[in-house]
Image (cartoon, rainbow, N blue to C red):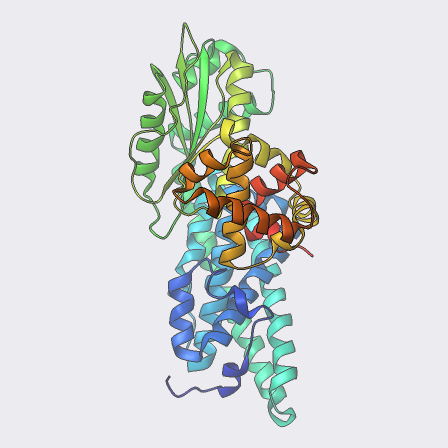
Length: 431
């Protein structure tokens, strides 16, 4: 610990102490703050970042979409962590304090989101941060010092807004110029017209994309995830490799900013079929695929399915899983379209089996494997590499926690277990 200019900051505590550091989007940065102020203030800053991001995405739904939503979350958390560290040390804030926020404009430009949304997001985040910080001052700081601390925080936050407005506007202008002069912009415009069902002349679309839309298609989405983010080139290469492995003779690959790639591959005589597992890819790459589809409608439908599978992949708690074929996650994708409702269903269906802890998670996974294998103890034991009696004990214990036998409401039970297995706390923390 170092000598702090504002010792009261060390008294900050998150609402949910269990969420840190697991809920942090910038774990290394959060742990650096924890080494300065302690885990309580670091967890508080992570929650502040999440509050700021929620305020922004609630008011501006365009910023809640896939990678854009992730970048909003990362940027808000970076600002929250940087603000707390700078306040503690009484140092100035610069654009280097939260470099993650400068990644946002590239993603906005690639999706046609205007600068006005970006600028409004800065002010929404500022308002949320001011409310939370000033509330903390009122709770922790002695009354004689509250006015001075509140004034310092207000000055501090307005200074940050000025910096963010200036630097993000400059980055947005740079990204927009680079995008508008690229061939990718014209191709993306055609693709987006197709995906929303607009009447696009087939000949023009084929010329712009350099891709025949009259064939069988398979859509792939590649994105970066995990502790070691992938480079844009690695995403494009992974998408192309997956399509080649599916037997595609022709491909169209489009980058959406620096963290996501849309791709399609086609065949003439028969549908391309995604492998159960594509060739090895770079660490940090995640892939989702749709189902094969024919013609323009198949091009659109396969991409929609890949998007749904990618949404599941982004939410998945299976950190060692990087490939999400729609055919494997379609049920989870459909059931989790309304995540709060899905969470209520899981908790209601599983009862105490939805509880926390590694041992309960093992029981859930065993019961799911048991139902996957038509309630065969022998095949479940082979799959899990445990004794048959171990499976039998775990199934009985899982039924006790649930409160009813596995044979009752078996369809609902199986669905709830599939959701819990894939999405973890995303559906288990309700209620």
